[in-house]
Image (cartoon, rainbow over all chains, first blue to last red; front, top):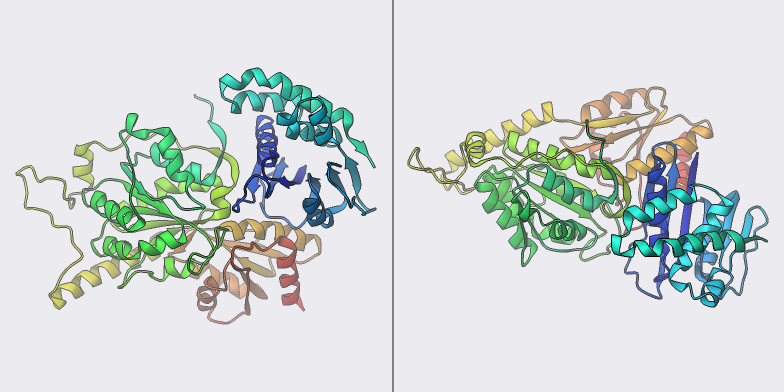
Amino acid sequence: MTHEIIISGFGGQGVLSMGKILAYSGLMEDKEVTWMPAYGPEQRGGTANVTVIVSDEPVSSPILSSYDSVIVLNQPSLDKFEPKVKPGGTLIYDGNGINNPPKRKDIHVYRIDAMDVAAEKNMIKVFNMIVLGGLLKVHPIVSIESVLKALRKTLPERHHHLIPVNEEAIRLGMEIIKEQ
Amino acid sequence: MAEKEITLMKGNEAIAHAAIRCGCDGYFGYPITPQSEVLETLAAEKPWETTGMVVVQAESETSSINMVYGGAATGKRVMTSSSSPGVSLMQEGLSYLAGAELPALVVNVSRGGPGLGTIQPSQADYFQTVKGGGHGDYRLITLAPASVQEMADFVDLAFELAFRYRNPAMILSDGAIGQMMEKVVLPPFKPRRTEEEVLKQCPWAANGRKGLRKPNIITSLELRSEAMEVINLRIQAKYREIEQKEVRYEEYMTEDAEYLIVAFGSAARISKKVIAIAREQGIKVGLLRPITLWPFPSKRIGELGKKVKGILSLEINAGQMVEDIRLAVECKVPVNYYGRLGGIIPEPEEVVEEIKKMTR
């Protein structure tokens, strides 16, 4: 099984770190992983995206033409990557600020209002983990346990008290994601 | 036995960790995107407190390469890293290192040019690396990693080759391999050589003669033409030996291939995806990935050229290696080129289209 994903949004939304946590979680399950950032002169408010590949076999190309799952967190990302979902693949988008919703009928489209819910519940800092929860609900690429293990491994110990709120965010994402 | 240490890291970070672990004595560098993590990782790891490895942020790339020259002259394992514009600044130093027959490692995590160009990945430094770059008749032993694991593995290998032949070695990578994170098993710790070991391995080094021998002189200068020709002939004989013994490459699905892609580094990774897609569509494609860009696997490419209907050179540049492939097959089989420029990385689907053009 190989799952090819791109996550795209504004710089500062935690796109790259969400990808990193997903990649680390794959590592925890002994899978092959590749994390390939668009490393241009990105900045807060600019665009940022990252390709994550989680596979049972060695990963070939880190550069892809199309993806099994596309996660977009703003309108420019949606416009750019909707055409790049493989037929039958998955598109997940945050509804916040989206004026032109996805149009394709040959893919599975999911909406997650993570931005609104994060603001309402004062969970802005774990916004990206809400989105990750949504992805894992649709495609259990890795288990929540592996994500938590990855967090324990990658976060400095002084931040370990934040792991429960991350777990809460993942579970919240799993609840609020809806197929369109 | 200790469990294998598997971690997730960027290619650039792997270079830094591998340097510390392979007994590197000194790193001299100047930051530049997309390879700054090499120096950053070394600064964070503080190897001067553990192995005693020296890490210096020099005032420029010119300064870095000349610090490398100085360190190498004493028989130490020394290195620098940079990206394309910075490596251009080092060309004089590389020529001097080759001329003085000094072992050293230079890592180029290349980006798009010419000029300051872009910070995105590129393989446009192929010519500069394998055809010279600096002045005079010299070569760089050049390794091209295609994964984060190879970024880690090639550091020690490059040093070994550099010392075996007393010649600078280059790891030619690119921004994609430098910036991406993958699983990596770091090499085991190898202690830095003791002073006695350095003396024994490098009897030519200028590391203090301790009253025991005549002074060793490290220089690339020889004003007597007859003597300079002798030096050149000796260096060329060494290069012929390297061409005989040190060619490295990987073959992938070449057994039944009717078409062959030749690609190195990240272009080779893309090629494996291209091969998967092409084979699903019934086109038998294989890959030859040069691991050493110099010495180039000309002989093997020549052999495979006799078996296939066409060769595609996939490069993230305007077509540089394609010239060496055409020489290798002596134009007996069509050799096409495909690539993208300016920091754009070709996507697998567009390369599949190029393969299809060859089948028509």
